[in-house]
Length: 155
Image (cartoon, rainbow, N blue to C red; front, top):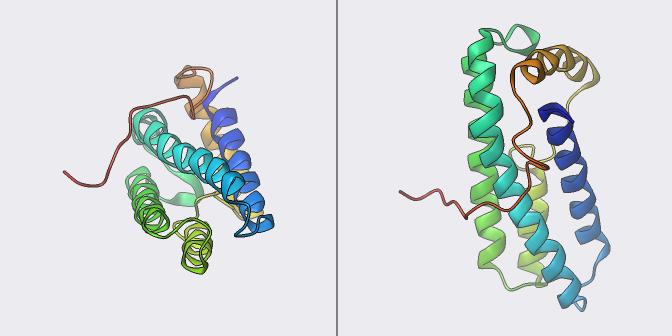
């Protein structure tokens, strides 16, 4: 398994967890907590792993997808990651299962493109780019979402 497969698998799992949240009700507090805890950890660790392993190699390739420079693409991704971190922090501030919590979770799902829903043409061009990166990067472990220490935006 290469890094691009790990990234794609994590994006699939993120979409699945957001879909589970959409199916749960405020009364399902135990299920909401379990799904949110998993999603929160996945979003944090996935972004951090991409920033440590994927984007440095993209910068080394000296080209991004769709003619975008690797600097622009990396800057855009980190901006998305920071938007996701900020939106996730807003979910954490709300009472689990409240209307505010569900609204914040919905906003998170729509912020910074947490599930990396690419257009078909963009996805096709990235496949070849990711293949180049995959040939240069060995897998960082069994999963990008393996346990990591917690990271915050502050300091």
